[in-house]
Length: 158
Image (cartoon, rainbow, N blue to C red; front, side, top):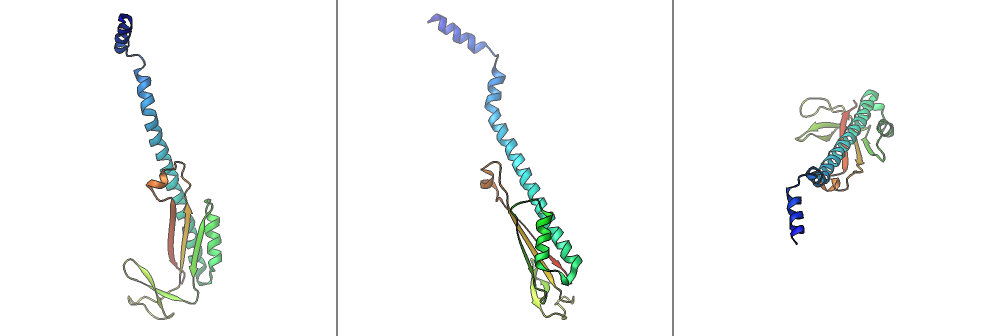
C-alpha cells in the first residue's frame, strides 16, 4: 500500500505531459471555432457572388433599355454566377410604368407618359431576385443563421 501511495504522490508532483492534456482538452473547442469561422467566410463569399450576379443582370437590363426581355436578364444572372442551383426570378412588364414612392421605397403603378408625385416622369423597371441555399460545412450553421441567401435589385430601364 505504501508503494501505491508513494507512486500517486510521485505522479502528483510530476508535471510532464500537462501541456499534452491541456492541448487535448482545448483542441475540440479550437477546431469548432475554426470550422465555424471558415463556414461563415464561405457563406459570406457565396452572398457576395450572388450580389455580383444580380448586379450583372441589372447592368445588362439598364444597358439594353426598354427592349430587354426577362429571359435574357435571367440568363445573364445565371451565367454570371458560379453558384448552383441558383433560383432567379425576373419581373418586367414592358407596357407598364411605375413611380417610386413610400418608405421603404416601393413601385406604384402609373400611366406611361405621366409624371409621378415628385415630378419625375414614370418609368419602366425590371426587378431581379435570386435565391441560393448555402450548403453549410458545419451542420449547426443552419441553426445559427439562415442558409437561404437572397439578393434583390430593381433597376430603371427607361
